[in-house]
Length: 277
Image (cartoon, rainbow, N blue to C red; front, side, top):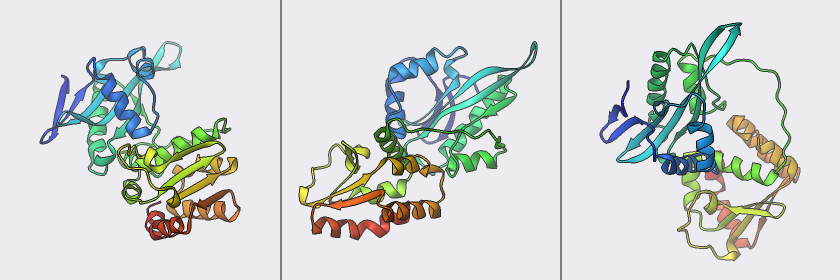
């Protein structure tokens, strides 16, 4: 399917290619979905300056002129033997607006992208969706095969950044949890060392009025708990609850209340919040 407008998905919804000038809106959208994805400079480096970049390798879903979905194709040759090469493609930056998830938007985007990759001669397609996500489940359903890799190791260099980005990613991919946290009537914040940020900040609720200090709840992490949270997205619900309980029992994560009213405020919401994790 060529052309700038690829296909109508439903009334007022289209899938189209990138066009010059989209960068500002795209970067704003990716930062909304991923939290601190990056800048226009990063977008230019990953896209416009990519050796095989073409405008129609970027797929944008719009509704009423607003971007609600995005993913891209990155083509490269895989050298098999001497002059024998195989054209491959990898899928990058799959994102759906937090308010539009669960409606099959990415599934339709994936169908159109794979069709386009096949028409351009790609023999293999790669993706790196996190286990336990809807994207991972759908990719397995339509025939993607998991490739066993050698063990990979990591070391946390900036724990406060890992904590912030991990929480942002988890929140924006869990609509039920976001809904529960939207109307909290106390100041819930996370702290690691001297770094601190609030739920209102993570949810980009800039218009939310400041909460009185006597209803402040602080969740304080140490370095070992941050390392565990870095793997949180790949756990199932039972494992997450087990690890959270263990963190509290071992005093790796502490909860501090500024007042008894703050304790009661969290207690009222605790069951509903834990049920969405």
